[in-house]
Length: 149
Image: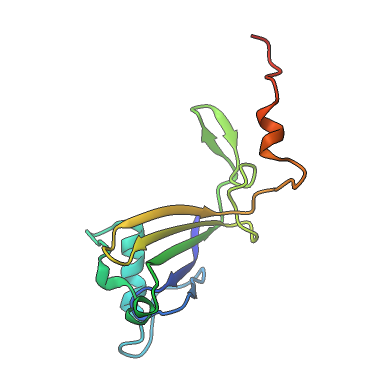
């Protein structure tokens, strides 16, 4: 797997959602002072929980906080996914076969943190899951198991 992009929402200097593409041959991040280079690297350290990096309440964008935003988010999108992976010790499958890829066929993992404390609020995989509008929960509840006892 390879990191394809990083998405930051309400994180430090990034008020709205910004997508930072990560090209295959990237070797560094270049830019003027105070343009967010270190913020991107620190967001990655927080996301991957490396080098003791921990989020805190000062990581939320101050303007977003004033607007009532209650969380900030760091999301990573991965491409070049493995052909297969093993579940339950011996069952091979794919991320696409488990409906864990987004519309681009990539794995996208998002972590949301509470603005008031910086604590991890939720981890989500953004994916395209098939939906059958005709299938209703009430239809499933009444079904009897079809396997032998």
